[in-house]
Image (cartoon, rainbow, N blue to C red; front, side):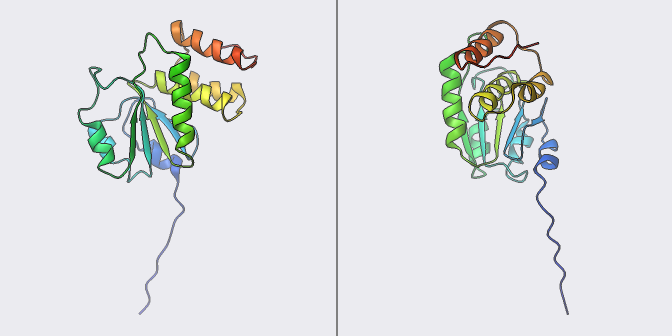
Length: 170
């Protein structure tokens, strides 16, 4: 008697699109951004292949999932909450985020906030400033969620200027 075992390659993009959250954007096999996943979606992150979560909204926002930290770490995943005030994002917030994301190495990471405005903006900057991705390609992912304005636009423009990157947000 023989047993046949078929092993299919892990398809990170297909798995990430199964994430029940608003504004899911698959950046790469290692990096996904989204809005706030439901508690059930958070409970499925390990099954979807994630290793870590960076949550960029304060845990006190009205639509935060109670016990998100416990739900995520209970699966053996890394959970980091970097509470970025939406009306006052700072260069220091971004620098902390970049160091945290870099420190996660090759782990598969979900970066999320409430509706993917903070997350998509910081990941745009990280891709351009830390990974050297072309700004236009990184901006395509950002603009699929929103066109930053107000303090977010000022932060992004300031960070790009300080790194001598000539790119105009639309």
